[in-house]
Image 1 (cartoon, protein in one colour):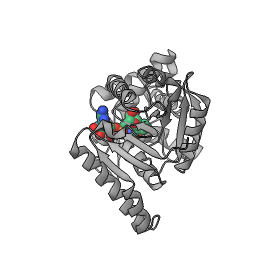
Image 2: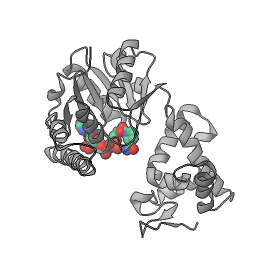
Image 3: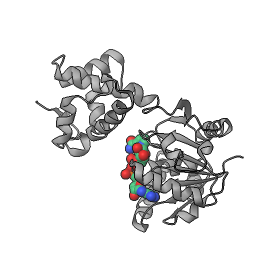
Image 4: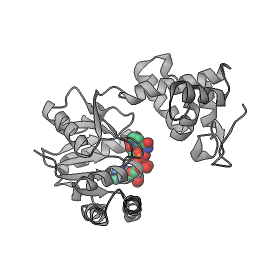
Length: 293
Ligand SMILES: NC(=O)c1ccc[n+]([C@@H]2O[C@H](COP(=O)([O-])OP(=O)(O)OC[C@H]3O[C@@H](n4cnc5c(N)ncnc54)[C@H](O)[C@@H]3O)[C@@H](O)[C@H]2O)c1
């Protein structure tokens, strides 16, 4: 079965990006949010992004209109009943996801595939809330979705081979590069990235280098686009702390354990760029200054 009708649940940062890319790629898309205001906000954000692409010459006015015409917003879960694929991008809380999947499982036909965009929750645990664990995968997109090229396609031990391959093909039909991975917390990207980021904090704690010197080392010595402490401020220290705790819980290895400094910074509300303060002070956002600890 070739996927044609896609449902998105959640039209926040990630859901709106996935909905936009799916509509641009020719899929018929219905997006569900919890209130009319949030539906409106999500769709307006997509319209703004599409308009920006037209201004830049990436998209013609006609392509924008066609993409917009393929997108519909709703607050009714029932409007997702006829979808071939449902991609879920709601808040990162297991009880909310379990409740949603239980309801969707009753609404949708047995052929509908469910895919979660979760960063850290076990795909198997969500699949177990449905009667279709064979038709359940993870599709992990990156922020901002229209720009970032990668999608991690995640199979559980119960995912059917044909469903997994169909989801790899779906990612490619969105113009993304897909990688295949299994349901181990962190998948590929965070499995490698999170210990690296935590090690940068430990290096700072141990006085191996200053904030600026640690960042410059990886930028100029390894060609990374930004240093690890700058990247931590972008991702959000609270988010990193949350993910590190989940990964430590799964693997029980020191490399995933959040360093004391990270915990202290999160407790103090120094969550990075969005909080105006993390490893850098963003009082002047164009010219961040390293913090003194
Ligand atoms: N932010 C990132 O960089 C990033 C990257 C990859 C994956 N993710 C994952 O994507 C998911 C969404 O994250 P986000 O950053 O877009 O969050 P977000 O807070 O921007 O958006 C979540 C949206 O889901 C809506 N929502 C909550 N419950 C709902 C329901 N039952 N039905 C419909 N909508 C509902 C909320 O109103 C909100 O608008 C999470 O699982 C997160 O782990 C995030």
